[in-house]
Structures are given as C-alpha cells and as structure tokens.
Image (tube, rainbow, N blue to C red):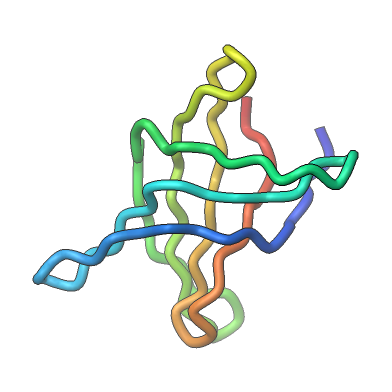
Length: 89
C-alpha cells in the first residue's frame, strides 16, 4: 500500500508528567463521510526528529468495520498537529 499522510482530528489526554496519549481520531473517507475511530491500544511510541522538527509517532490499534487496524499517528510538537501516516496492516 502506498504511504499516505493525511491530517486528522485527534482527542488525546496529557498526563501530569507531560505524556500524550491519543484516544480517538476523526477523518474523512473517500465518500466525504466523517469516520470516528476509538483507539483501543497504543502499541508503541517513538520520538523522531524530521529535519529538525520534533515529532512523536504512535503505533495504534483499533477496530474499524469489524476488522483490526494497525496504524501510525504522528504528532508534530511545534505545530501541535496530528497526521495519519497510513495503514500498516
């Protein structure tokens, strides 16, 4: 599958120590319908610099249309934006 980056709306929580955890994301599908996805599990978290721009990548698991979905969410720290990096499986 071709890697596709698309901006998404995310509801997240921050702990007292400053850790961010995504809870739900919202995106628009091909028919321009809003799709809301509850994140069931954050599998891994890694911090990466993209050409000097710090970001955090969350590998997440959710159930969409009765299928398990593993995907990556990128949180860009400087701009406070979220992006879906494409489906992993």
